Amino acid sequence: MRDRPLLVGSLIVVLAASGFGILGPLARFAYEAGLDPLTFVAWRAIFGLALIVAVVVGVRIWRGTALVNPFRLPLADRLGIVAAGLAGLGLNVAMFFAFDLTSIAIALLAFYTYPAFVAIAAAALGHERLDALRVAALGLAIGGMVLVVGGGLASGGEATVHPLGVLLGLAAAGGQTVFVTVSRTRFRTLPPEQAMAWIMGITVVGCTGLAIATGGPFGVVLQRSDALAFAMLAGLVAAGIPSTLFLIGIRAIGGTRAGILMLFEPLVGVTLAALLLHEALTPIQALGGAAILAAAMLIQLGSPTEERIEPAGVPSAERG
Image (cartoon, rainbow, N blue to C red; front, side, top):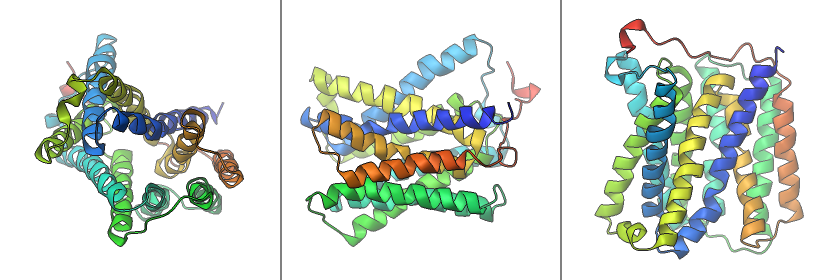
């Protein structure tokens, strides 16, 4: 079927968004177990990297996938890996400080503007056409996200708006835009799981260094079993697996479609918060969820042939 690659790629991105979406409830439980936000991010990255390297990369190599030496890639691809890694690191740090300065809902509203930035960047660089269908789906998805996140504020929650916090949320959106745009076009000869291992490695080094330097409770995972369990679960289910799936999805369906479908993340987070943390799901949030689902269906109507990029083969000199 002509549309099968688009459907499969879309499902992969939705799975990635669902994995990232559990971070909210997991973070709440981890904080109660003694972790702080920056330390939680550091341990999440550590366990996510361990999963990618020990399981995904290892199994793929055992099944015949070549281990690519990134230092033998073209300079532009090496710079792309560094740029994606630094973007991921900056994204995490910016969001951490944004959450500290302003209400989480406000920070998320600023961050989830990134699908629009991705679509604009893709059109400006000539990677994808920003046609009427994509514009409609993008507007519907972002509108739904505003209802999902803002619905919590409308239910009676107090909002703290700090200009620097909003700017940091937008900076995080910029980091995500860089990650998606660079990953869409660079280091295509590097298998997704190997690329994510190098990218996440940069986040591990940066966030671990910041957590230790700021005196965070870095050793609490060695002292409390519940803190260890929540950090491991976040690393495995909400970092390693969804990060790799996200990169695969970007390569399969393009940055604009992937960005729109990633708006399932706040929908999943709000739904899980309602189920696990007994936070009420308001009618406004339900309407927002319906809008996101409608956008996901609308984006499937376009032709996938223009924006799909198949991963190139690994040059023979880099095999072995």
